[in-house]
Structure formats: C-alpha cells, structure tokens
Amino acid sequence: MRRFRSLPLYIAAYAVLTLLYVVFLVSVAVKYGVNINFFVLAVLVVPVLLRLVALLKREVVISEEGIEIRDLFKSGFVKWSDIESVGFSSRRRTFLFIVTRNKDGYLIDDSVENFKNLLEEVGKRVDKGKLPKNWKDIASSYKPSYGGIVLVTLAILVIGYVVLKSLSG
Image (cartoon, rainbow, N blue to C red; front, top):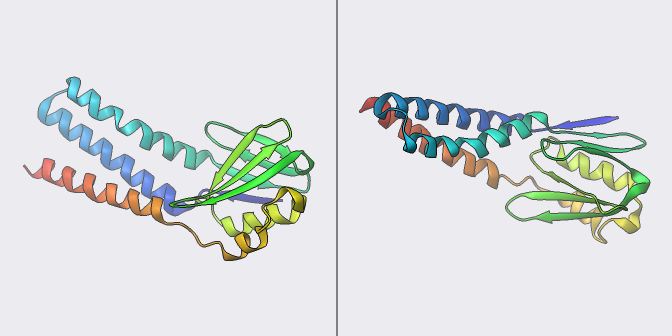
C-alpha cells in the first residue's frame, strides 16, 4: 500500500498566505472598523482557506485492490477493474484524470508528493488499453509544474507588502 499526501511546500505556502490574509483583515478592522468593506475583503480569504483545508485533507492511497482518493469535495475508492479511462493534462499545472465505468470522475493534481511515483503506480495497475497511448512517455518525462506555487508566492509577497504598509502607516 502506498500513500501520497499533499506536498509540504504547498501546505506551508497556503498556510502563510492564509495567516497573512488574517493579519491584513485584523489590521483593516483595527484601523477602519468592521464595515461592509471589511466583509468584502474577508470573502477573499475563503478560497485560500478552502485550498489550505483541501491540501491538508488530501490523500491518495494505492493498494492491490484499487485507488482511494480522499479530497475535500470528492472522495472515493475505485477498483482497478472499474477504471474506464485515465487521462493526463499538463499546462500550468499537471492533472491526472480517472474515469470509472459508471462515469464518476476523479482529479489528482501534482501538488501531491511523489507525483511521478503515483503515475508509475497507476501505469502498473491499470489495463494498458485504458491509459493514453503515450503513457510511458508521460510517466517517464513528467516534470513538476511550479506555476501554482509561484503564483502563491507572488500573492504572499503582495499581501505581505500590504500588511507591512498597513502596520507601519
């Protein structure tokens, strides 16, 4: 049995971003009071907080029987024999799609640790006819996508700058 969890780098980045948002909101509340503008700003924290919770909850477990995906919005267990197709997409982020016989779909992105090993494990267990024709090339040439973490880092820098400015002036 192999377990794959979220990369600690992603968890740390989203935790720092969430913390900075909270500090920013507290500074806004202290400086300007709690009004409608405060609540508009507070809504901006919700997607970041949801992403952090999703990263903390995410786990992919591969066993001889199948693959279990635990996620914030969709979790489930799929037997290897119930997989209808496996897809792969690599743009700014890389995704693995698993579609079952009853047309349920599961999505795993490469913010999961050891994603290359995950691809290899799936490739070993899923019927070759259900994998993309170039699966071996995909698994062997996979490179981590850092676009998401770069964007979060930029957001941390921007929010950090705003927090520093709001606390100093």
